[in-house]
Image 1 (cartoon, protein in one colour):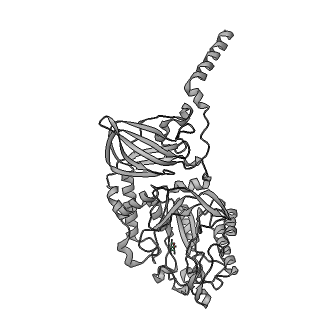
Image 2: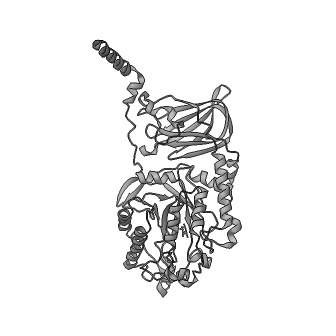
Length: 490
Ligand code: FUL
């Protein structure tokens, strides 16, 4: 009996060794290609959409850029409804909120010990108020990550332009990073120097934005006090790389070919970093609330288009929704956000690729771990990959029956880096493949909008890639709303 059993075991081992599946288990995942994201950058990328709240002295003077000579008493806030603001963000599907705690006019929304130009000297709660506290508490309650925008340029401060101001700035930052819980993103604006009040001296102060602030020291401080915070790059000249960069416009456009990796000169050496783009854009013409702009709030359709143009191009969307002098999000903005949420829900209601059968002309080591089916398993952590050296490959989804769609969503497995630079989509039409769309980069997410397309089979061809492709998601949607027609609004 014992002899029989050991024979059976030997036969089983032989069968396993010879089966393609068994050999596949031994396949190694592809090596990372180029710079790769940190865990915090990946978590940030997954947020996709979050918002700014511009609120401050400008809200009460109806300005965009205050000069810095405004009396703190002008900040006539009677009631601040942090709960309404956070609830509005949460309902809109935004994942975080970045509060402008000090704009260029220098007025601080928290009772800082480092300037008298703050809420402490305003009528709000008789100087006992702290909007950073109120807002960060409300964000925690509404499941929003909380971030801060602290303007480096300070048109109020007498010391601006001298090393003493840089110390003040860092001390303000320290207060913010140590008193208000976890900060997911620290945002520094690029506007710098120029005219201001400067403690009564008035006039123009010019600084060198690359050297004046000593960003290296400031970044070290952030890394030490909030190691998980994402740092928004305030300048192109970096020695310590930031985590994310400005997309290059304030109108909500991601690049057609969108790269998370940048190559720049830093400290005299050219280096490459994972530093994906973020697009900041306002729901209104201005960044701050102005009543005469109530009728110019972006429509739900425009917001859908914005998010396709940014998140659909691997660019996180930072949508500004300013609070009004009543300390809340105005109803015009609330209505637009509700409409946006509803339209988005309708577009992504049903993934028509779910349940399809997926095959590929190359699967890494024939290993089920890298099978084509992973692109439709709904899991971000699994992916289809090919053998090393494969730079063109095709994956086919058999939908089983003629299916109509107009949005294709592709996702690359970015923990291994960004690889793909060319994609072609074919539809099975009249017994042959017919190309119906192309795209360049994929990255975290690529949304491709096409005319209504009806087919029973879709083929995704990778036509250009820097290393063997690793795709984690392919989805098909049928938007009842004509997204393409909005593209004229670019
Ligand atoms: C700009 C600033 O000058 C605007 O006022 C606004 O804060 C925007 C987000 O960044 O550069």
